[in-house]
Image 1 (cartoon, rainbow, N blue to C red):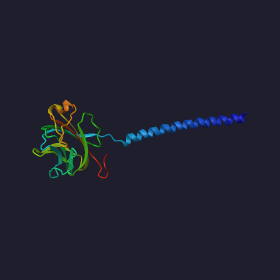
Image 2: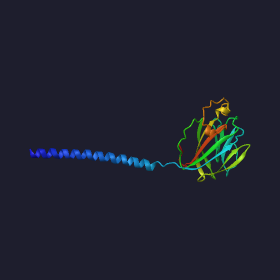
Image 3: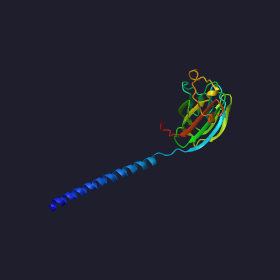
Length: 209
């Protein structure tokens, strides 16, 4: 009887130890996963920002690296953004006379900014000098006090809204009248268009998502 009791007690102890070890293992795995996520997902930081007014001409305005010659890219005009090495242009309706542009330089991919955006496109561009200018065909180059961290390959996210009270606006892509959602009066500030441009560095051998 004592032998049977001893065996049963031993089995019960082993089972209890096993359950305890399982709980410890599960807790350890969870903690490691949290720490891994915290270390493996760097927080993007806003490095610099600048906001200015621009007057588009010939249904275009853009950002151009000062180290390259300015020209209008021979790109696919079915997209709002036209890009070439050292430059990115946004097509706009001919009715847009004045616009506000906010430029943001980020350490890595930035968070999305909520809003009733009419349009959103992303594009990659190589900037050989890292010193950007805002350009329109009639207005020429405007210097801006925002310098990228280094020359190289960058991803750009463009988002924009139109002022519904200043329309109607005609699409430069389809020539149809655009259906404009209510936008932020504060961001538009009475202008025809507001555009947010977020820029961040990407590795040359990694295609950004």
